[in-house]
Amino acid sequence: MRRNKNITLNLKNITPHFTGKAKIITLVLVIIILSFANIINTSALSYSSSVNVGFTFNPTLSVNISPSDLMIQNLTPGTTADSNNITVSVATNAAYGYTLSAIMNGNNNDLTHNNGTNAFSSIATDSSLPNLVTDNTWGYSYKLFNDTNWNNYSGLSTETSKPLVDSSGQTATPIDFKIAAKASSTQPSGTYAGTINFAAVSNAAPMSLLDSFIASGAEQLNGYYKMQDMTHDICNNVDVEESELQLIDIRDNKICWVAKLKDGNCWMTQNLDLDLSHEVALTSETSDIDPESYGKTIYTAETGYAKDETTGVVSWLPSAIDENGIQRADTIDMVWNDGNATAPGWTDNYNNPYSANPGNRYRYTNSSTYNETMYTLLQDCANTNNNDISGCQHAHFGNYYNWPAAVASNNTNGASGSQTNSVCPKNWSLSNPDEYRNMLQTQKVYSGSGTSYASGGFNKIRTSPLYFARFGNITNEKSNFLGVYGMYQTDRYNGGNNSWRFIFNSSDIWPDNSHYKSVGYSVRCLAE
Image 1: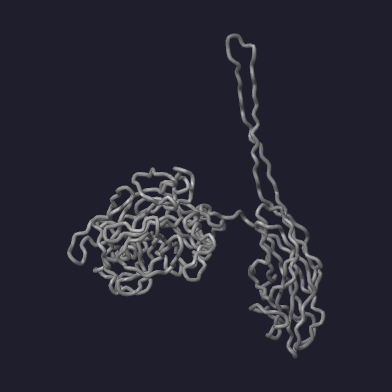
Image 2 (image 1 turned 60 degrees about the horizontal axis):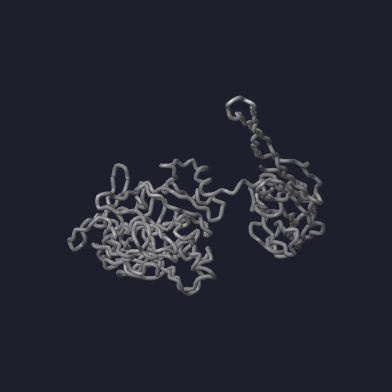
């Protein structure tokens, strides 16, 4: 809902009071009970019926400007001067407040001489009085009613400008508003005028990740929205901080938690659990495989890539035979024994893709009882209730992937920098060290200097909404550092047999740490 008031910059012209409308339906249940007594040899009987009762509530929205004009009284050739102040106030009882903006009322942002000449143009960049350096320009400044400092002067637009006030979640605050102009030494005398339009818009309810998917018109599968339907707009439109949602990966119909984090991006908050197969290719239709990547130096038949010239679909099929001619198994299932894990068949290979599947196991807390298989990760679950996994829904192991598997290539010789493709779903990508660093800093996990946690960062990295887990790694057919280190692949090559990884333990955190490509780590994906 938008309601406007205009102010003429030297003419007294103000629009009347107005109200806006929204609708709230309240249902009241009325129960009518009829009872019958004194019926021989029967129990009491009753009858009930319900009546729906509702009403419409119309919130109000109004703008008040006092005084009703802006005047620069003493602008002389070659000088800069500012106007009187006006106070702009908005009153509303709309549930989510309002946004107040100021725009020019017309097709340009000039102040017009009374002879019809457009002479004073609105400045394009911020500037502080008296530093309006360009002759024959004007701009506005404002401050919240209780502030002492004015904002720098800015130029108004004929389109919706940056909001002056957004009252979401706070008490409505009046603003003081003024203009300033700079005249050249040859500027003709006379009156210069224009009109500013103050637009107050009632704010919609904050949009969650679920709301954004619904608004996008995306279709569901098995009652879930699809990982592959995530778009930049869906993520960008989310207003609810750290809003989370379960999505389905249509490649294997597994469910995964995702959330919009404070860095403004949408991340998986559960480890990737896709099993690789030597018989089923990943394709650009459902996976993070760029159709334009085929034919590049590192994406040749040797690396498992092929292109359907009719459809343009690019596919990647993990090799079943390594460079030594050894037949590889499909995704390796780990073997558990009293909390220890092995991955028979895992080969520390720098170029061929390997992945290990620990199974769909949950972490329990404060108990020696484990789901399906015993292992020790007591300290890493967000929920501290004994034997309750309801708060540990993000805590699936997921799969371990060596770097060739993570970047979807059967041979990473010749790789450089960040890779184009990954095992992530379509519209998601393997995150890089810079993205990890920025996300961890905005979530107040990482201090940004050295390997230091921010205050409370170790708890934050393992709990809502991040749920990073210390699942260690797989190398030499063994699980290592379970419950000690969290280790995650990135998309970035670091030369020779090394790539960059994100790693943390209880005392240190490294957003970028170099290690062997052959080792299997967890994977988290970032929406593109």
